[in-house]
Amino acid sequence: MMGQPRKAPAKASGMDDTVITTFNPTLGTSGDEPRLVDHIRRIRHNREGSVAVHVHLSRLRPYHRESTHIRIASRSFDNLCNNHDASVYVMANCDLVLITRDVKVSDIDTVVLKLRTLFSEDPVIFADEDIGHDRFSSWYDLDNDFQNFWMLLEDLVDEGKQVTEKGRDQTPEALLGKPMNALTLSALTERLQKTRIADLISRQGALHVTAGNGGGMLFQEHFMSIADLKKRVAPGVHIVSDFWLFQYLTETLDKRMLAVLGRRDFSTLKWPVSMNMNISTVRSPEFKVFTDRVGEHTDKVVLELQHVDVFADIQAYFEARDRLRDQGYRVLIDGVNPLSLRYFNPTGLDPDYIKINWSADLRPSAEAGRMDRVRELMHDIRERVILARIDNEDAVRVGLQLGVQRFQGRFIDKLVAAMSGKGGD
Image (tube, rainbow, N blue to C red; front, side, top):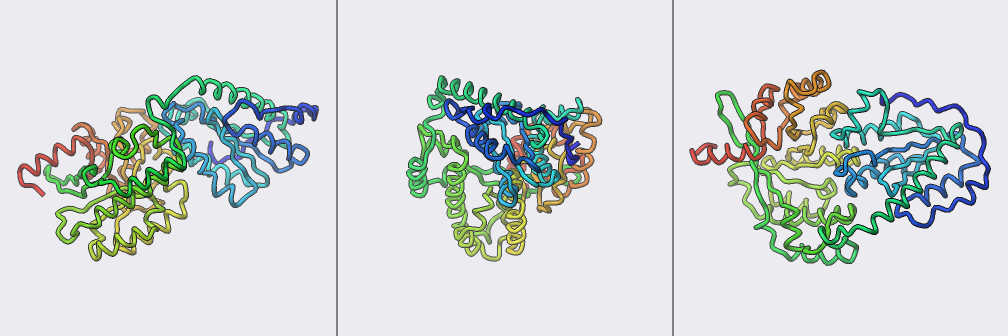
């Protein structure tokens, strides 16, 4: 069970110190293995109170092991590392290793639980409950179990070398483009600031379905396809190859979006608008300019914040949410999946809306027992839920059975088009 202290194995016998001092991991790996080995060498004679946590991200599905997700996962430990004696290392195989000293197990467990939530759709996560064993994380009391951890570290170094060597034989640049670097980012940012983007902005409505098959538009989401943007400003560049550089690029894109939408006369808008924003953007001078342009009509704007951005810095989210509400905006948390609701209750984040992606798991016949609590929670928070990625009528029917009345997706696009053809609102 999460939140319960781990019991360390029985104390291992001592090791020959020369094994540690002569081990050389510096060649042949692209991960943080050398830095981790150096850390362990430095503390090997003073391990009291030290705990290591091995997070097995390499066991996740390939999609969840993309560089963006790995960087988000490692960033989740930022607060812990900034406020305690703790360091996190990213292995070449995508695993994370956290080394702490005199840190409460409950504080570490809180972050690990956050990671379980972020990757909750992966079979490794929900399989743990069935087998009664945690395959997502392994814990080591370094004072008592140093030898076993060192053996693990040797295995990680060997695997890191194999992963790195295999990577040299593959050329993703041929499919995705050259990796983005600081110089490329600078050029793309300048190009993005000068390039027309208004014609790249798409819209998708979110519908509020009421009794008697009636309905009305909740808002129109304005968004831009990264693929379309890449074709225009970055052909031949893999713009998501580096999470931090891509994050900076999206902040620039946010500001361009604010500039484009800020030219509108919000007093004449038929429906409210929504747009995705980084939390850092809503604290920027450009957002203040946008707010000044919107004036007294901020109630016509819904700001969508990605759940991974929220989890990365909860305190920054709370501060941004309160400031936005004071200004009259509505706040939406985007990207939540049903399985993640088994691990956290989003009402604690107190957004105006929660966008939950449709999944067949929400059907009453799916995952008997396991999903009952999720369906109950969906019903409890139904006034805030927008069920997204709706592709067929069955998804709407299941949502209505759960008490949900707000929907978005391709099937909803067809309903909106039909309503517009009939002169509906």
